[in-house]
Amino acid sequence: MTTFAPTTAARRRFLRVTGGAAATLLAAAATTAQASPPTSSSAPWPAHPLTMIVPYPPGGPADVLARILADAMRSALGQPVIIENVAGAEGSIGVIRAARAKADGYTIELGSMSAHILNAAFYTFPFDVLTGFAPILPLVTTPQILIARNGLPAGDLKGLIAWLRTSPGAATAGFGAAISQLAAALFQRVTATRLTMVPYRTANVAVQDLVGGQIDLVFTTPDRLAMVQSGASALAVTSDSRLAVCPKVPTFAEEGFPELSLSPWFALYAPAGTPADVIARLNSAAAEVLADPQARSRLVQLGMEILPRPQQTPEGLLSLQKADAARWWPFIAAARRAE
Image (cartoon, rainbow, N blue to C red; front, side, top):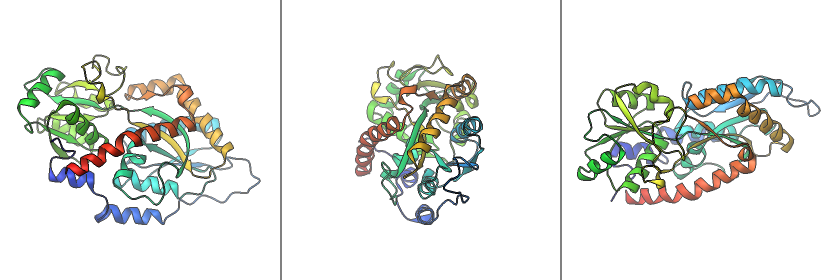
């Protein structure tokens, strides 16, 4: 039977629920509110700078996306948007920090499918993740791309799968994020193969080890293709259509595996109870950024796909949340039972 986390180390990393530092951090975050400068009820909004909480460390795709948004939203809102990186517990610390902030429109959060949906299967949040925020809009999807080191006895995806089926557990797959391990688990389930999972602290280190020949496979975001160069090959991407940043890489659907469609997303949230008129202003400002040709070009270069304008609504984000919860919570629960 294919398991979600074949190695003990990987299991501890992905399936930890309480205990240890994560539980301590979550408990602390649950009792700490994000301070907002005092405002007058009669002052026009926004009357001072906003804070955008990013629940990941600086330098990654989420941080880059946040800074592109923050820089451009300043013009639409007439106030700076200050980035605050609040990393920890796979993004859960920042999520709780944002949920506890004052609902006055001065704190927003760059959320993700991983932090808002997947983590709810592992961590106990002090609120319902589907109703604990005021959704603003979904921004982009960031598909996963399967990269294989050079030298494997397979030149393409179908060849790789054929080899994996004859050598269960022989291939090592590195992951530096929950979403990457989810992609690998789905890959095993759909292709009837078994990988030996190797956890890493960051995705960059996993890709570096792949290029160096220490591991065989990596699921990661397309922005890391630049690190690969000639040391590995991109075999397939989980998006519904080919990406502009790597147009020669086929989708899993093209290769005969439509079940491997996986489009993790980033979105903007505000604390629950934020006034509707403020949500509308924030939505308009962010949508204006996504429509800007220069911003769009930068996001496409990162391998991100901008959602169509009709989906860039609070209702569109809520729909995404519910659909992914319905798909992934049972999948993760079944994988945990298989442990």
